[in-house]
Structure formats: C-alpha cells, structure tokens
Image (cartoon, rainbow, N blue to C red; front, side):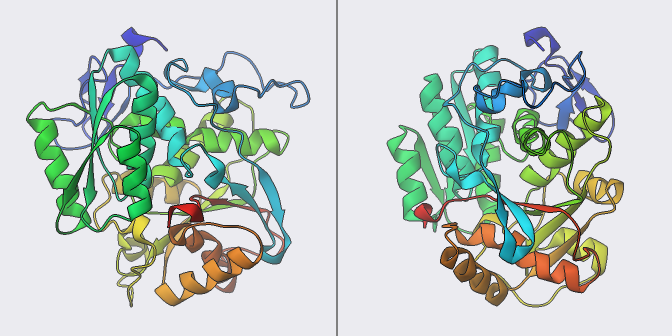
Length: 363
C-alpha cells in the first residue's frame, strides 16, 4: 500500500476517511484500513523464505514499507514441555515487548504521512515502544503514563528523548488526558488501542508463527488480553493468512484477563470475583475495540477468562525457574492454560502457542 491507499473505514457505521490522519470516526468507533494489504502469490516454501528482514519479511501483508525499523521480529518459537505448549518469546524485541510490532508499523505510517509529533497513552510497554521508534524516526513524542508507572519503563521513555506526561488517577484518566491533547491538535495519535497501523504490526505475530510451523496454524493461541492489541492482531493475521490460502484453518483464540479488569470474560461468563493488580499491563475495564474482540472470540470458537493475582504470581515464579524471565503481566497467558484445560476448552493433545509478551528486565 502507498500513501494514497491509507484510507480508513469505521468499524461500526462504515463511514470512510481519505487518509490515516483520522483516528476516530465521528460516531465514536475505531477506524480500520479500508483495504487490507495482501500477497499476490501463494505461500512460499518455508525452506526458501528469506526472513532476514524480521517481521518486515511479510511486507506484502503490511500497510507501508519499513521506513522505521530496528530489525525487529522473528522472535523464537520454543518448546515448553512443562506446559505442553510452545512459547513465542516476544520479550526479546528491541524494547523488551511485543509492542515493537505495532510501533514499527505505526511510526512507518507516521513517517509516510509526514507527521512531526506523535502522542500515545500507555501503562508502559507501548509507550516505551512508541518513544523508541519515534526516536529512530526523528519524530517528537509525548507519552501519557500513569503516575505510578514502573521506573524502568519511565526511564526507557525519557532516554529515548520522548516527553513523559504523568497523570494521576486510573488508567482511564491517562487515556482521557491524552485524548484531550489529541483533540486540541497536539500531535498524531499513535495509539496501540485506536491506530489501525498498530494492529497491522501485531498481526505479524501470526505470520511468524505460521511460517515457523511450516505454514500451519496451531490448534489454539492463548494471549494476555487488555485492549486486545495482540489478541486482535493475531486474529487479523491468521485470517489474512487463511484468506490468502497460506494456511488452511484458523486457531482458537483464548484470552487471559486480570481479575477485576475483565470486561471480555464478564461479557461471556458474567461477573468475575477477586482482583489482580500484579498484571498491570492489562488493567483495562473499557477496551476500545471490545466489539471486535468479541467477534474474534466468536469467529474462532474462542474464549476469555479472568486470572487472580495469586495465580499469576505463582505462574511468574514457575516461568522464572524454567528460564523465561518475563514481567508479571505476561504470566497470565501460561497461567490460563491449566484453567482452559480444566474447563475442557483445551484438550491435553491440543497444539497450543503462548506468546511471552514482556521482559522481566522492565520490572
């Protein structure tokens, strides 16, 4: 796709917008690209596929070229026998989280648009990613963060030359403050929840998984679920692969939410009990794309459940003891495996992939 093809369409009412400068429909719903990029060829032989450009090896599926890149992507897919699953090590990205997938695509679009300043609101990982890739692009960035943001994530934002804007109150208050700045014209909204380029980037998770498995999808993928940045990216990526004929079936998509912040699980199963303040990266009570998340669950025969603080802390210790040095939020997905198996959503012989989304070095 080129600049002239970065038109957007409302996910709710269908209204169209000429360029990716828009960030929200007049009806209030999020926007998506009017036309998704897709390859004009069949699936290449995995043995001959050139993956040296990282996630940009899948440029045929991406909205623009790699204007802003740090060599991200092609994270390892490793066996995890104790979990009867495969872990995709997303925490080895340049800024230590899967959010780099969205950041490289979003800042590449920003560069193509000629953006001079981006703004983002984040509990930490997305902010660090946007700040870092904005620095790579030579674009100014303001990152709105909770006042309680972890010091390591705040340092990553500051040292990239971005301006952190600390906001007292809830995660929703942070978003509200950022949106006020956007509506006042103070920058282009490089949001991991609203910007469709970010989801085009996180869709590369699915392309890599399928490629690393010889162009086959697993039976299921279990991801942390807050705003749905990776969950929806995986859905869109596997759907694009299926539509292109590169895979035959889509996996069941299973979300893992934090108790007390589990709107998707509550929509599916009713009120949840307890709270989980350990998994701070997914403490989202009102996800921007809730309807799209529910549609993805329905389309893949998926599900979403809420995990307690104790379950996540226990799983985090287990991961660390086995050499997977992740941050707490990322432990919700492997912790959900046992619960999904106990509920019969997953069988013992299902082929499951779990992304480990953030580095323990950020704690």
